[in-house]
Length: 331
Image 1 (cartoon, one colour):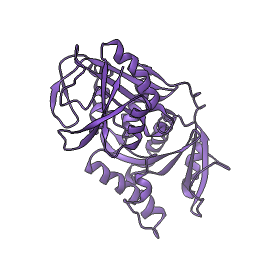
Image 2 (tube, helix red, strand yellow; image 1 turned 180 degrees about the vertical axis):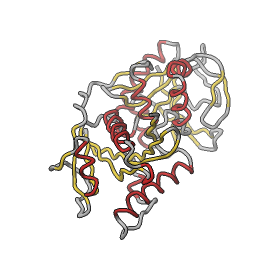
Image 3 (tube, helix red, strand yellow; image 1 turned 90 degrees about the horizontal axis):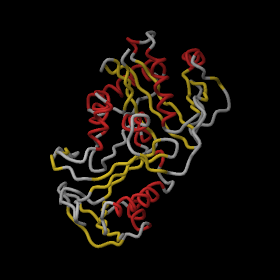
C-alpha cells in the first residue's frame, strides 16, 4: 500500500487533520471535551503534526512531540472511523516510529485510550513508568516502546548530499522543516524526491542553470557547495554561493552562506560549528570577504555570525520586503 506520513501543507490537509481527530477521538471517546484546533501544544517548536495519506487520501493523524533525551511522545493517534480495522493504524505506527528514529529518538511514549490498549500492546507497547511531560488521565493508559537504539552522537561534520543519507533529509522535510529560510519548500522537495531521488540530488547540487526561489522567482544559479549537517543523524543543511572572481553577490541572494538546522537539533551550537566549517570551503574557492545576513529579530543567527568573526556593516532591504542585518567575515 502507498502510504505517506508528512506535515499537512494545504488548508484542505489541515482541515482533514483536525476533522479526523475530532471525529475519531473526541466525538467517539471524549464526548464531554471540546476539540480545540488552536490548542497551544499544536504550535510548539518541538511538536510536529503529521497527516497519514494513503494513495493521496487523508486517512489518519498523529503528532510527534520530541521530549529530549532521545525520547518522543505520540499524541492523538487516529484513523478515520470508516477506514479502521484495515491495517492503516499499524502502518501509521510503523511510519511514526521510523520518523521518531530519524529525529534521534529511541524511546516512544503514548497515552492510549483504554479501548485501544490491546492494539498498542499487539504492536509492542507496554504499560510502565515511561517518561512524559503530560500527566496521566483517567481515560487512558500510559504505554511505551523502545523502537531503536539511539545513534551515538558524533562530532558535527559536513557531508555531501547522497542517496544513503537522503532518508534523514526526507524525514525532516516531512516534519515541516525547510532548508530555505525565506520560504517553505518542504512539500515541493518531498514531491521531487518521491518522483526521482537521484534526479533530486542532481538538481540540488548542480552548478548552473535556472533556480526557482521559494517566492517563485526564477534566477540564475550561482556556483557553490551544498552540505548536510550530520552528527550520526541528519541535523540540517548549509550552502555556499559565490560569483567567481568577486566577493560580491547579486541582489537576489541574501548572502554567501545560508543555513538551517532542524528544530530538534537546535541549541547545541551546531549552526556556529557548521558556519565555522564552511569558512575554509569559501576560502578555497577564492572568496576573501564573506557577506552573511540575518533577519533583524533573529538573535540566535546574529550570535552564530558574531562567534565566527562577523562584523555588522549595516542593513539591507530584501525583495520580499524584509530588512536584513548585513555582516562581513574577512577570510
